[in-house]
Image 1 (spheres, helix red, strand yellow):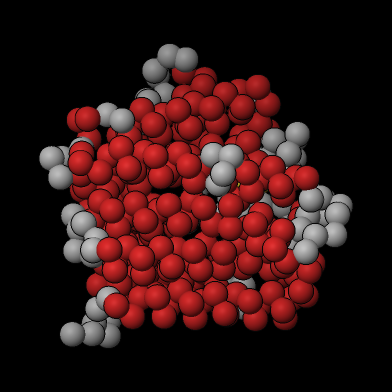
Image 2 (cartoon, rainbow, N blue to C red):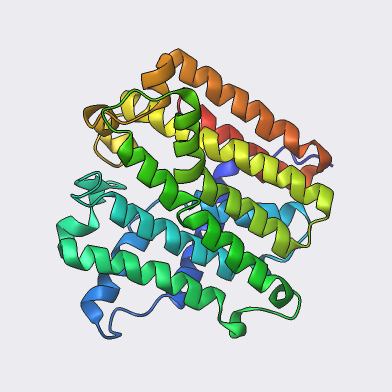
Length: 301
């Protein structure tokens, strides 16, 4: 039965609260030595943000009838990895951004050296959490090794880090569409795909459900970055939460630069249709995934 009263915003707020409460529990406390490092780690994790990646993991788990408690540690580990990547992405040696999520970037508050270490700490903390047998129940522990492998692969040189490397190498160069899609599907899409696939694994998805969710994750992940490319041009700083027009200033490879705003929006809509159609095998339990796909794209129009 369709719930016509269902709304995305209350769902996002409730799931965000659940994730942030768990993150507070799993991260080292500020008074844990070295306190300055742990303060810097917590600063970036709790500096705001939409928590889209961990929420997608929870939503994928829900779509296949899984238990949220089984997936919450992995969702928090994923958010730690995402937060570390943002700290390093903002560094002077990379994008040299002053603001992130409307707040001064980590290196602006704690200094470059501590920011680097805070990113390193969050990346490592994610795998401390994932490898902790105390956070897994008897069912999810069976999948623990697969989850660790999948997240490490998608976060590393064949995933997010690799996408960042090609992104930096492509600055001030004219790139073709395959190169641009490589950057976006790896730098941004890899963690979003990992989020959805891990939710499927820990939720007990069938092979058909898992394939469908992976197709959704691939399309939604690329759509997310296409929308971000557009927002970097059309949004103001209060909406974007970071420096506006920075991609253009650094000569980064983006969809608007290659296809124009209208072409980029057309590509975002195409990816949105792919994401939504991939969920046809699910019932109303996949509604959060559908609405998140709509939200990802619609914010750039």
